[in-house]
Length: 288
Image (cartoon, one colour):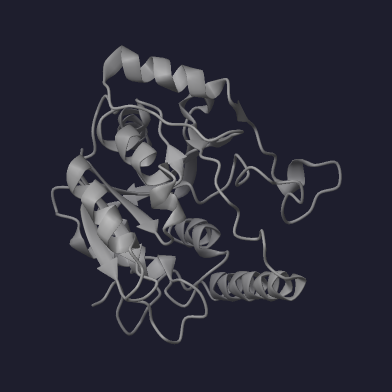
């Protein structure tokens, strides 16, 4: 089996702060079993945005295919789903598995190898991975084998587990104390399934844009198609890199607006789930 990876990027801070390069190093040089092919969808913020240019240079350096995505006027925020669907459409038939990865993660050197092993064992599955949040910015270096494993072990000492809302004493939808990153059992940082399945469900739902619901929506649709969720082993977790959070330095009114947008996304996803609508994007997806 072979794996193709896809990742979405928007925002110059992920590039200038070294976050993207750390991710690419862990994905393309650390792996004991490198992915067959990798794609990075980059949504431009406009003609003055240098993100596509700078990110594409790094992509070439590490053997990743950049895909520049033009924003749609009717999207309130960015459209990660549409960007990832562009990636799905461009994978080759040689790739049996397609794996979505968040751009702010650092992967364990055996991340791809363990995923392939799970698919060899598990059949019809949706594969996901745990993450731990780094408590300070880090820089990793290009290397292989034991040296990569040593760097990963050093990072482990600088990380913390972030509980989900239902792991707190008073269960809630999310963790209000989450200041370092997503919950360690979040659905979004890593999602993988057979390539044929991604085409069967017609990718991520492009109605969902901005904050929330896109990753959990995939989990619900997997259950509708008889796929069980399989998690990576606890010791093959990823590291979420520390970076400015999107809710920082915005007005209370904007925070409230984002929360309402997230809620609308979630309600839409639940509505489609109860309709048993596992296929989406009836008018075309991923630019097609």
